[in-house]
Image 1 (cartoon, helix red, strand yellow):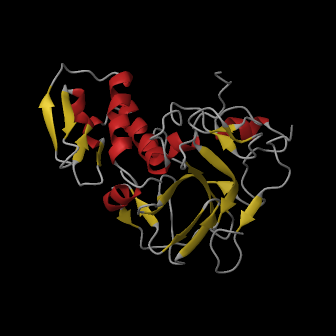
Image 2 (image 1 turned 30 degrees about the vertical axis):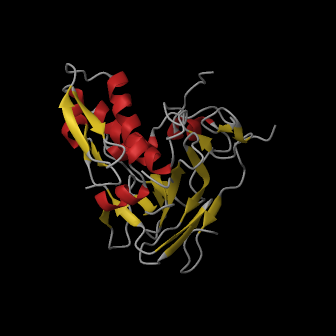
Length: 276
């Protein structure tokens, strides 16, 4: 979200925020994924509500990448970018990745980061591109080949120039993301996503209201019951910039219901979107 652009975490009760027609409301650590923690913890950490089972996800997919995000240990504090504590003994999960340590690492940037890292790891370089708020398209493939983006701060005109040699390293990739984080935001990201018109959501779908300010969260897991009813696990960045957090709450989301309340934001309208 930008204008431009010691209590155990293992809970015995998990909140299912879904009733009737309503939406919503209702130092390096040892890394464990959602699945690993929910298999080894008793009671299960971030487990689906009683009667729900996680859906099968294609191996190597963006959805599977999100389900298997590395997490900090249960009971870790949730930090702002400057190291100060936002919440001690966070009752959800703190994602243990290279994000949340810069002032520009905000909500849209968390979604961009997760999508871009998966594409980079799977070497889908040509698909890594995001628009700045002014509409300029920042292509990682050009950046990796040695082109750099220049910006006239008076006119906000942007252009590429060949400044260095090719480099596909993570260090160079992360520098590309830093400039995207600075000049992109919810307003630009929303325009790049397609609107979901049906009731069914998938892991990797994005909940977003673009604007100045705006906000966005991303679906990182999904579970269904025998009746076919689905619940979803959500992750977010925020403003001020912070680490990525996964809420300790499963949400019932119907995109045809035009409101959804999450911790920190009330989404309205056609908020359910998907990467193309």
